[in-house]
Image (tube, rainbow, N blue to C red):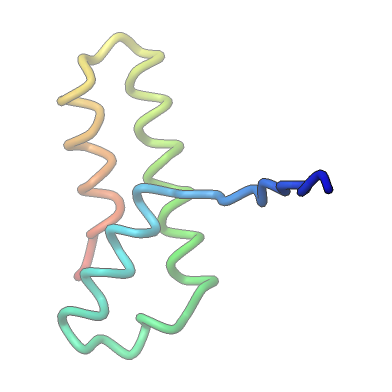
Length: 73
């Protein structure tokens, strides 16, 4: 009997995971606010992409993206 294996698509967003962990670790009530986390993660991802396209090195673009992600926290 042939066993079928299904691969589920899992979307890992580094910025969303990082922010979620930070919020959980700091007992922030926004840790359960998926919209807040995803919006911030999207902004950080866009910041990273824009900075790479403008010629910044990876570490520079990452630093600026993290500033956007963690702004006000």
